[in-house]
Each structure stands twice: as C-alpha cells, then as structure tokens.
Image 1 (cartoon, rainbow, N blue to C red):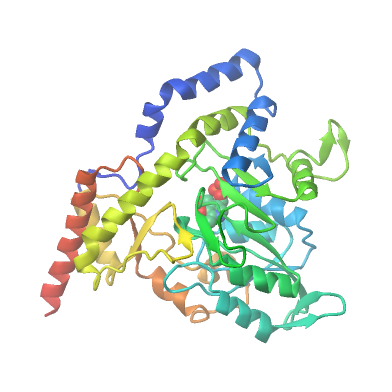
Image 2 (image 1 turned 90 degrees about the horizontal axis):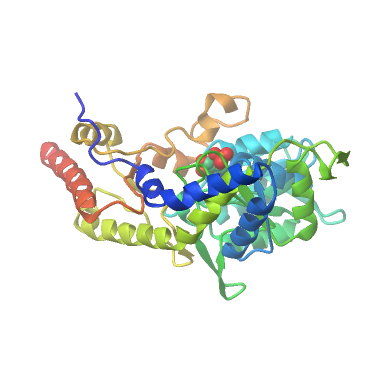
Length: 403
Ligand SMILES: Cc1ncc(COP(=O)(O)O)c(C=O)c1O
C-alpha cells in the first residue's frame, strides 16, 4: 500500500493561508458593494496584468480555454480555416481551435525544449502548403483550406523560440497567438528586436489561464488575453460579454465569458507576489539541476535554452521505465504528475484527424518518459532533498539490477 502523500506535488493551501487576510478583504469588499460582475476590481486587474506582461491591453475572461477561443475569433478565424499547433500540450489548446470553427494541424516539438520546433513548422508550410502571393493566402494542399495562424505553446513555463516562428508568420501572412497559459512572467530574448520580451507581449495576442495550480492562479476559474491591438481588445471584450459594448446593444452574438469581480480582486492580491514566487521556482529548479547533476545520464533534466528565462510552472524530467518510477515515488509518499501521457494526435477525441502513431516522433518518445516532480514556491530544500534522494535511489537500483 502506498504511503499517504508526505511531499505534495503542489501545495495550494500554504499560499492561501499566508495571504488569508488580504484575500478575505477582497471578498468583504465585494459583499459590501455587491459588485460581483465587471466594475473596478476587473478593470484594475486588467491594467495591472497588462503592465506585468508589458502589453497595452488585457481582457479578463473566465478561463484559459475561452481566452484562446476568443483570441482566435477576434484574430479573424473563418469556419474551416487551419490553425497550427503542437501535439504536446493540454487539450484546451486544440479544443479552442475546434470551438472557434477551425481545423487543427500539428507540427512536432523540439527534443530539448518541448516547445514548437520552428524547423518542423517550416517543413509543414513548405511541403504541405501553397502560398498564393496574389491574395496572400497560405493553403493546405490536402484539404484546400486556408491556414490562418500559429499557436506556439510556452509549455512548462518556458517560451517557444518565437523569432523564427514570427518570421514564418510574417512571410506567409499568419497570425501568432501565444498559448502562455503555463508561462506567466516567462521571458524570451528576441534577437530580431535585440531585447528581452515577456510572454504575453510577443504575438498578435497571448492567452493565460488562472486555473488554481498555475503560477498565477485564481480561487476558481479564470483567464486573460493580452494584446497591443486596440481593435482586437475591444472585439474580445464584446465577445466575452454577449457581443455587447453597450448594455443590451448586441452587435454580434458572443458568450458569457467574463472573469468575475471577486476572482479579479483575488488575482490582483496574488499578482503582487508573482515575481517573488517565480524567482523561488527558478531557484528551486536550479537547485534540482545541481542535485541531479551526477545522475544526468539516467535523469534527463529540463533544459533552458539561452533565449528564454523560464518560470518553471512544472519541473519535468525524463527517465526510462517511468511507470516503475511512479510506483516508487507513490510508495515513498512523493507527489508527481504526468504532463501529458498521451499525445493529442493519438487521443480518442482526435481519431477523426488524419494522423497516426509515428507522425510526431519527438512528442511520442517524450510522452512515454516524462514525469513532473514537486514544484511550487513554498517547496522547502528539505522536501526537495527527499524527492531527489528517492529518484536517485530508484535510478541506482535500476542500474545495479540491469548489470
Ligand atoms: C497549455 C494550456 N493551454 C490552455 C489551458 C486552458 O486553461 P483553462 O484550464 O483555464 O481553461 C491550460 C490549462 O491547463 C494549459 O495548460
């Protein structure tokens, strides 16, 4: 029988206990004014989060999934258009593509960074599509559909390599929407701009999730879109609120997709701590790297490319015999996660897509080996030592038994 968990994968209780007084003040304020929908708390959070991301505008919505869907709609996606993303992401990325009426096209990830491989993107565009320079449309040859945009996912808190992706997008007239749902505060060094850029300020728009376990998490559901495009921001504000800019004047059909005021207020409180929390995650990641240094042969560590400053939403390592390691950690009472065990192109939900096993070898290989170790700002060095000792114990026993 497994031990009851001694070291959690994620401790969501500690930060809420630490901030209880400040968080409860938000709830009391909402009760005192009955301002539950829209209003100053939402507007203030939008201003603060836009500033945090170095973006002009932020539109707060009720989930990361809706953030993606609304961004696609406002970027001008037409029914049947193709949107390109990766098969190694949470299904919300592709659900939102389908919900916006578009078709999913996958390109593989990079073996070291686990984010979109720009060379695979180029290969898809150059070998599977035709560009009509007269009307500026990229057409997928097999389906004859227009390719509208690209969604790089800043997975595990590390940005995708955005310069080459943006260059291809500019050349072929495609939009780029960053899926930054796991990357609040991550940075990218753009050689083209010769500057560090924050996730949320690079593409045409970027989407964030405030699901409780995220680096910035609500006490419920929440999401946001950031952009520097005023028209797009205004459009997304309408989409999230039944297609109205003025009450009961509906220019289009929209959704009930607003972030509620209490969540916005709670997020403002937590946003003030986000930089500190992200720094703790980075320090813990570097400590993990050091502690695992001598086991690098058997434990593949996450690699931070020179062009990124990650915020370690997850600390994901790779091992052979991942299933046995799961059993070993469970026995020791150590929490872990698998993000994600089945690549999206092999999920039942997508059996209708024209993909098969073997199509995305990097994604398929790593999906069988990855395991996410405990990572949260309050993780103590003592807890981290126990995690590392347990993983090392596993790999050394395996090595001895395979001799
Ligand atoms: C990469 C990615 N995209 C999109 C989402 C969707 O966010 P939400 O759960 O807030 O809808 C998530 C959330 O887990 C995510 O990790």
